[in-house]
Image (tube, rainbow, N blue to C red; front, side, top):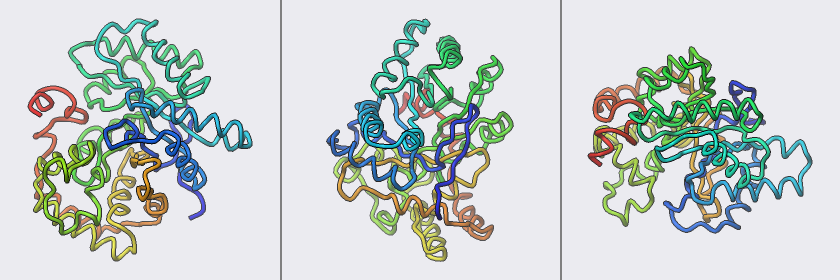
Length: 346
C-alpha cells in the first residue's frame, strides 16, 4: 500500500487510522531516554504514521513531542510540518473548573508541545458525581472557538455521559475508549450513538498491551511482576482474567493465528483490522516504546491495512468470543474500569 488510510474528524483534522500511542513514555513501561525517543519518532513520520496520541499526565510525552516538532520546523519543509498531528488529553483532578484553571492547563500543553493551537484535546473526568466536568467542557468549547483547540474530544466517557454532553450542545469529535477482540463493550451501545452523531471512536488496548500476539500463543500463563513487567501487561492481563481466563484466551489466540496464517500476516494484524472494521471506529492507537531497541513494529502495524477479514474469519472469532464473560456486566460501560465500584475493588 502506498499511503496510510486517514479519517477526518468533525472540524476537519485528518488523522491516521493507526495512531502512535505515547503512554509508554509515561514511565510505567521502563526507563525512557528522551533524546532517543525524539530520534525514534522520525521513523514513524517517514513511514506515513503521522499521528501521535499523548496526555498531559503521560510524564514527558508532550515535551518529547514538542522537541520533535521543533526539530521538524527547523529541518523540514512547511508541508511536512503540517502533515504531523499531535493529539493530547486534559486529565484534571476533580475540583473547581474555572475558565482560568482550564485555560492555564491548555496553555501549559501548548507550551510543552510548541504549538499555537492544539490539534485535539481529549477530556477525561474521574468522578461523574462531580458535575463540574460540564464546566470544564464549556470552557474548552470556548477556547476552541477562540482558536486554541481544533478538535474537542473525550476519553473514557460512557454512553450516558456522552449523550448528556452532546445534549448540552457541545460538539464532540471523538471518544477514546478501550476496544479489542476481548473488550467489545463499545459495540453494545456506544458505537451506534457515536456513528449517528459523527463522533469517531479512537481505540486503545486493541493488542492487549502485547498479549494479543504470537509471543503469548501456547505460552504458560504469565504471573507476578517479573513476567508482567509493564503497566500495560498488568492491566490487560487483568482484563483477560475477567473476560474468560488464560485457557479461553489461548483458544482465541489459536483462532487468530489460524486466520493470520491464511492472510500471511500476524495475530496483531488480525486483531487490529477486526477493530478498524467496526462501526464508528476512526482509528486504533498502538503503543510505541520510542527509543527502546527491538520495540519498533512500524512495518507490522502498516500491514494491518492490507488484511481483508472474511465473514468466515469473523464467524471463527465469534465462536470463541461467545463463550467469554459479558464485560458490560462484569465491569460496566466504557471507562467504568476507572470509576465506581469496579475501580474501588481493584
